Length: 328
Image (cartoon, rainbow, N blue to C red):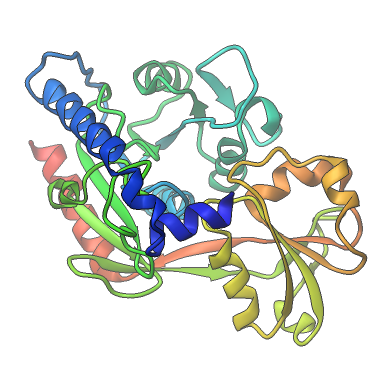
C-alpha cells in the first residue's frame, strides 16, 4: 500500500487520473473552509502569546518534527520560554488534550509528542483541538511562545508566523490534492506562508534545511553509542514507520551500509510480533519509531537521532519576524 501511494502521488500512475474528480472536490472543500475562516464565518481563536506554526502541504514526512526541535532550541537560546503543541496522531488515549512528558506512553499520546518532550525539554501538549491544547499548555506552564507541530491546516488557532517545510526532492508530487495526489491544500498556498525551508537541497523561494544524523543509540541501553561508520559495508535491517521511509533508507546507504528495508505505515504501532520478524543482526530505526519499541528492545536494536541544521539567514529572518510580532 505504501509503494502504491508513492507511485500514484509521485509518479505517473494512471490511477491518479481516475481519482481527479474526488481530488477537485477535496480541493474545493478545503478552499471554502479556509475562506470561511478568513471571512470569520467559522470561528478562530487567538491565544495570549505568539504562535508559530510549522507544517507542510503534503501527506507524509518532510522533516517537521526535527525542525520544531531546532526552532524551540533557537528560541530558548534567545531567551524565550517556548511550549509545543502536537496532534498526538495514532494515540489511543481517551482524554484530549493532554500534557505529555518523556515518560508518557507513546501508544496513548502518540509517538511524536513523546519524542518532542524527550528531546526539547519544553512543555508539550497533544490534542487535535489546537486551541484547547494551547490553553492547557498555558495553564500549566510559563510559556511566552507556542510552536505548533504540523498545524498549518488547523485554522481554528490563529497564528502569528507560518513556516512551511518542503521535501526538496519530492516537492509537491504530481501537484494534485488528495486522493489523486499528496497535497493537503493546493500548492498555491505556499505563497501565503512567512518562511519556507527546503529539506536537503535548494528549492525556489526557500532556505535550505539539512537533517544531520548523530551517533546510533542502543535501545536496550541508551548509554551505549556507536558511529554509523562502524557498520559500513555490513548488512543491517532498517525499520521506518515514518511518512517517507525512503529518505531514511537512503541516508543509511549514503553512509555505506547494506540495507534490508522494512517500511511501515507512518505512526505504525510496533509490537513484539513485528520485532520477531526482523532477522538477526543490527536493526536500525528512526528515533520516532524507537519510542514505541523500547518495551521489547533487543541489544542489537539501535536508533538514529537527527538534528535539523539551517543557515544563519533563516535564523535572522525568523528572529526579525518575531521582533516584528512583539512590536506589532
